[in-house]
Amino acid sequence: MPTYQTSITVNAPVERVWEVLVAVEDWPALTASMTSVRPLDADGASRSGSADHVVAVGRRFAVEQPKLRKAVWTVTALDEGSRFSWRSAVPGVTTSGDHLVEPEGDGTRLTLVLTQRGALSGLVGLVAGGLTRRYLEMEARGLKERAESPAAE
Image 1 (cartoon, rainbow, N blue to C red):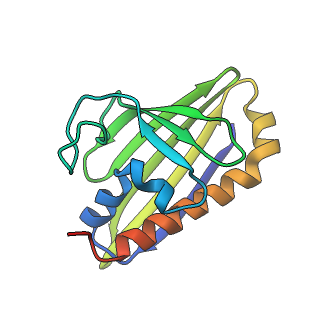
Image 2: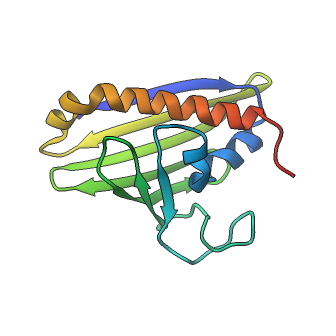
C-alpha cells in the first residue's frame, strides 16, 4: 500500500490556507502538476456564488494531470477549516487524498497525503511513485505561494 506525504509551513493564517486549499478548481493555476480540475456536480454554493466550485462530501471533480489518466475524485470527508479527503478508483487501484491544515506558530502546517490500495497499487507505486512524490511537492509549494500572496479583492 504505497503512501506519499509532504508537509510545508505556510506563512499565512489557517483560514487563508483553507480558502486556497478548497478552491480546487484553481489548482491548475498554482501548479504544473494539474492541467484541469472541473466540478461534475452543480449543487451547493461557492465563495463566488456559483454552484460549481464547492468542496462538500459527495461532490465529484474531474482532474487532469500531465502523464496520468484523467480521474474522477469524490470528496469523502470534510472537517470544515481543517481537513478534506477525496478518493478516485480505477480497476485494481483506489487512491485516497487527504489535505490537512493546522496551526503552527504564527502560520499553518499544510500536509498532503496520497494513499493507494488495491491489487495493482504496488505496481502503480513502482512505476509512478517518483512522479507522485514530485506532484505532491509541487502542489504543496503552489498552495503555499498562493496562500502567502495577498488575497484577491
